[in-house]
Image (cartoon, rainbow, N blue to C red; front, side):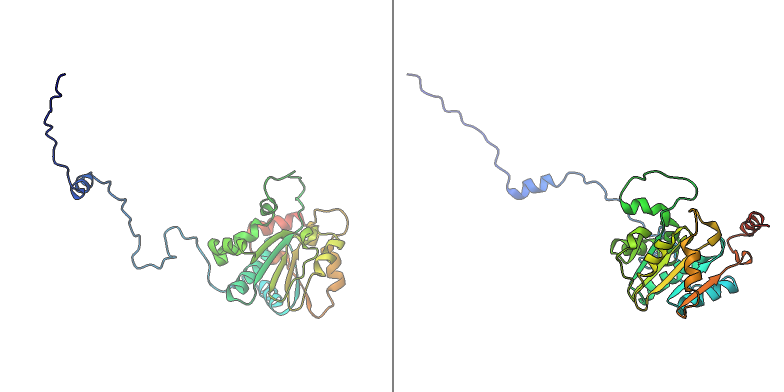
Length: 262
């Protein structure tokens, strides 16, 4: 029987763990991306992409606007009547933003009737908030300007800024820490206006804006009806803007004059 030949194997001495670890780490590494600081002396919020924010107090552009601002600050319910471009919505939205920023109120509620101006948009896709966004974008622009887009987004997510159709106001109570704005009120019915106004609680600030002569609904509108009924109450103020108070542009003033010329 043949004997097995013993072969002397010449194995290399094993490397210790440290050597293996050292060899493995000698592989070339990728250089990390460089971070360039735009302004070393700026605050964290003062970056190149931060949206512009107007932190100055609201200043009236006309005597009529100043009277309107004073009325909102001293009355529980203010009706702002007048043609487009007089600053009804802007003044109300800016005052609401200032009150929220200063801590005088805890919530802003923005609402309007979901009525299209002479045309039907059909069924809009998305959630209720996405559907209603098309109706309330003008106020969002005002709030973004006065508070900053980041603050507005945060307040919307946490319920401190609420935008909802007028139909969803039923059953609510507007508390003393709330600033409520009803825009385009000329498109409400008398029943809708009554429903909205009976939501007002103690020490709540409510502004109702609209142009009685630009209604998109048939028949009498709730804004004209409410002004006639409530204008004599001591806590209610009715402010009327004229064509001369239009501040949007001189062209808008001329256009309104030509359309409303007798």
